[in-house]
Length: 251
Image 1 (cartoon, rainbow, N blue to C red):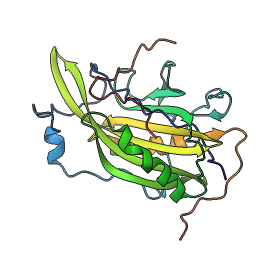
Image 2: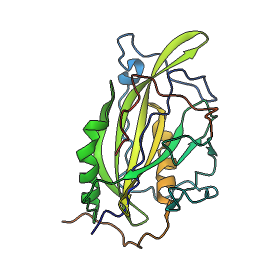
Image 3: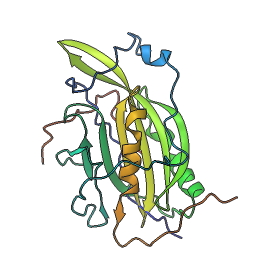
Image 4: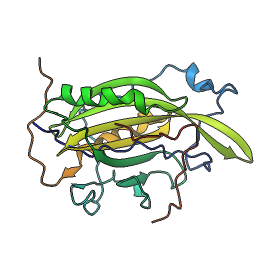
């Protein structure tokens, strides 16, 4: 069976070389050696979900017009707003202002030729084979690839950490940010939803990413049973720094 989805969201870092302070407080400066400073002195809270929360996921807002040549429809979480269109992305959303994290990004690309995704295990294996090539500069994989079923469709997920440089009161400050990446394969396209937020904050916004992914409507895609394991210009948002900018889309 051919890969069920082929729009892999290019996981390009929307976090910028210079980012204005937004509505939420931001983490303190990282160490001068580029380490995560205070962020690393706290125990990492597991972000990736094995199952969805019993209370359900956040409500979604209105669907955007069909994207990716009418292959898919996407709706942001109800309290998120649409960012302007930008090459390389199907859609971009912000929560606390166009110049402030967090961001939700949706991208798509062709799946590797011959990809076969029938199970959660297949989806995880496909993404895992590509992850190491996607880590850029000082980025690290802090939670490995696992799989989760969202509305009966297999998704692979992982968490990566990088650094963000911004200017605050005329002073350069670096912070640790995390990127939760969710990828599925539909009709030979890889679709990716990426949440970017400060390392200490992402656990608070993760369910918005799961809600967006679960709510995606793949037009003309076959209905699936629940997957199981066998046995315009950009006025806002930050531009990626040379250090953190991915050279290729994330799987």
